Image 1 (tube, protein in one colour):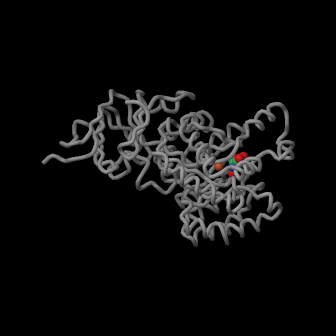
Image 2: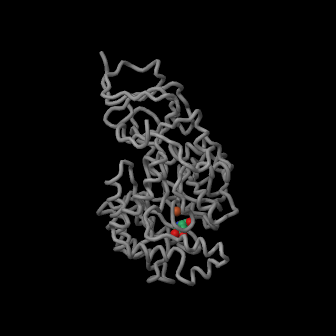
Image 3: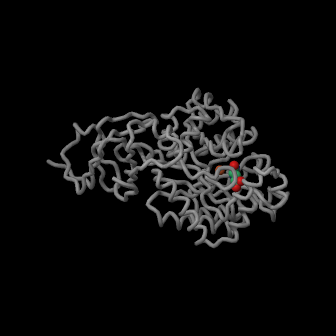
Length: 407
Ligand SMILES: O=C(O)CC[C@@H]1NC(=O)NC1=O
Ligand SMILES: [Fe+3]
């Protein structure tokens, strides 16, 4: 009795990332049916399938599709001028005094149409997709008024409909205090809780709610207010926490069973214990450590010791991480934060899926999961973190069919 499937993929080693480890199946085979993995194992044990198409790779490895679980990919303008000013000796304070920084991106985002936001984000997304990204999370947070935040979230949903990758939307309206609310952060949090979040939930404009817990942004108490509303509305939460100081944001996020706490350079052992207990994923963002030339690294040893899952993401944003290569982030995670190549690869697959609440359907080559995978013409997985910059040629397969790249 021959089985039937839509496609078979043969001739490469399967780096399955089951349980967040390589778990390599040499000379493996994948069978795909209705966009999901129907069978994965050694080709010698492949059952007799009638397949509509069969692809024979000439060696190389197949990994799960890459998941960039933390980006601010949608924004107006860019801040390359400030980058140049800083290197010519202009201080952050002077740049901010001249209207620079995050608020200059807010002005450019408010001035952009929804279509312009979609188009500029799509061009940046194309670079990620060329490197094997099959899922990307994109945050709002540069609108900072109700209409502009809704415009951003609608633009993210529009972009999702135009690309083969899965696009997940996160509402980060609590990214900075809007200029109209200067000195009145509580009032902005109230506006978000009373107006924006109910609309986000009602119109399904976002899949999670995020906030920036930092002295220059929102306090743990203000984050708590926001998280109470999000939880009541049934929206999962995540948090930019311990990036520049230890405010206990990560432990607060863990108490709300946040999907993830992100940045974490100033994470304490107490925070790590709370995250381990709640299953909250630690999302590390080496690009936002590298560009601002930070010195305090996240406590990777502690996260390992307590078994807190570590994800790696680009944090693509015009200010602190204008990074449009997830593979470069893999190298930085190893070179700067001392992750192993296996941990880094799990950080953009298995653990990144969990940071988006998608561990049941994404992040490893296992039967029943979505058939998002990438073929790399390389000999071993470590080459994905080893080769600096540039783009390795790869073949990206989304839900078993749409391809990107060369075979
Ligand atoms: O500078 C920007 O545009 C965003 C900075 C970015 N946002 C955040 O919460 N932390 C960051 O590093
Ligand atoms: Fe961020």
